[in-house]
Amino acid sequence: MTTRPDAHLQIRDLAVQRGRVTVLEIDKLDIPRGLVTVVLGPNGSGKSTLLGALQLVLHPSQGTLMLDGEPMDADPVATRRRMSAAFQEPLLLSMSVLANVELPLRLRGVDKRRRRELAEHWLERFGIASLARRHARQLSGGEAQRVSLARAFASQPQVMLLDEPFAGVDAPTREGLIEDFAENLSETRPTTVLVTHDRDEALRLGDEAALLIDGRLRQTGPPSEVFERPADRAVAEFVGMENLWHGRRSESGVYEAGGIRLASTSKSIAPGSPALLCVRPERIVLTRDGEGTGTRSEAGTENQLRAIVQKIRPRGPVVRADLTSGRLHLTVDTSVTKWDELGLSVGDAAVARIAPADVHVISDDGAD
Amino acid sequence: MELIWDGIREAARLWWSGDGEIIEITLRTLAISASATALALIVGIPLGAVLALRRFWGRGLIVAAVNTGMGMPPVAIGLLVALILWRTGPLGDLNLIYTPTAMVVAQLLLSLPMVVGFSLASIQSVNPRLIGQMWAMGANRLQVLWLLIRETRLGLLAAVMAGFGAAISEVGASMQVGGNLAGETRVLTTATVLETGRGNFEVAIALSLVLVLLAFLVNLVLTTVQQRRPVT
Image (cartoon, rainbow over all chains, first blue to last red; front, side, top):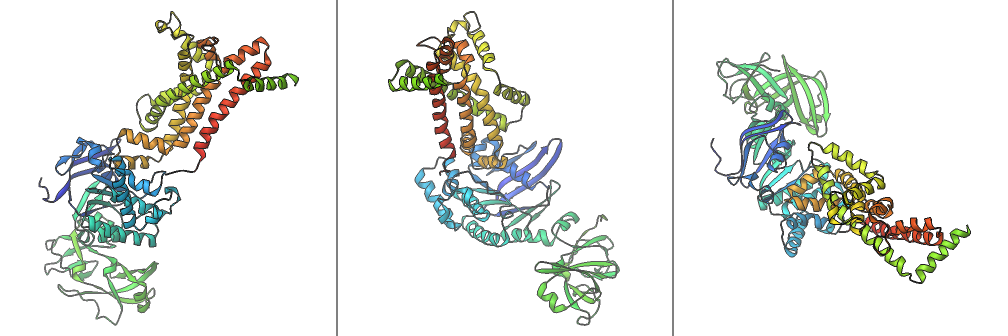
């Protein structure tokens, strides 16, 4: 089993059981030094269990966890003192903000002057220096999460383990918090494992991604690749590939699905083999019928599908429309502004344009 | 009614005149009960923490025993300690029967279940994820215990009050293992019983008032600490 040359944390043959059920099983995962690895997956996929194992608070039934090539469980307290953690809940203790941020340093025996200096520095960096003397119980959710993150940075960890730290705060607060976090992270560059289920967060903060489904590692790679080029159907469904079409690759290299011919730059499937064509809903561009040139799909050219609008669902900043083209069902996300310009209603004809590069093809196991 | 007023007047007179015996009994009472409570805290808080945080075989049985202990009649405890410390008992060679030490042991056994029970309840109420965060911050076992005590200080002060209350107010066990010897093992409760039996109601009332006042003052201090605004 080869190891990434930049691996800081190494996970080998890890299995965690809850009762008799194996909830996490990872043969190999390397967490690169100084980068942010986002751990993605649906609820119950084992993301938090992985983080718990790395924090040495869960005891694996088998496997080894290594930090800098040394077993992490040789001296758990010493290992934990090289790391820090923040969770969805701020988990502050019943003391002042300053005392909370100082606490990990106090536990490490750092002298008072130095820990005060570091705590004040990180409170400043997270824009909450004015809250230093306030009791932790008197903070808003967003303020408390800032304190929690300042505390995670204050101990100058080599490894930072974060479990959805932005999930519990409201949208506007979250935006500012992620911005400050990203800035501080880029300056200090600890090895970071960030558990999240949010695509934007993963794309914005992650250098690497590891996707777990049912306790097993299904795909690793840069986040954009995981989101754009899922390895299998389960990953495709999780990353929001709303359009999954069963098809077959023809000899000419064009794919056929639901009676429609579709061009793709993806060539991973042998001609004649069953294929699953995956298209993200926001990658389909709609125009009113008549503005386009009718259904046309050839290798290397843009796919144009004539389609009928079946259902319109406003979803915040986008409008999600369901359309049919032949036997294909299309799900398309369009910005509200663009949708208003189109002026489409249920029953109207439209042309759906899909770039061949946006049609990702994976081997089809036939399951629906 | 006359009797009660006489008792209150006698109590005031005894205190005003600085009655040596009353002061001596009061100090002895405080020393014995405070020692028993302190020992109960040293043993009881870690035990309560272990019962709150760990799952092991027999835990349920221990918790049930603790809960039973919280309502245990003092005379039963007194009898048990007396049998153990009796000259012919298993620890008779230590010659502890009818000594303040024997009274501390008996009061310790009475207040220990209170301290364990209250500690268990307050530590169990801590968010388990907060305890996980304590470990994640790099705390060792002792530091986690320290942080838990800090975090549950309101509940633990209730444990101190309950433990001290159980110790200072009991009479049966102190009588059985202390013997109510003047100048040696006489405490406020046993002295009150003695004076009541002799018909010296004024003195009995005076002693009772001192006991109530003492219990009130100790609890007042603890309550003040418990209820003050959280500090950094």
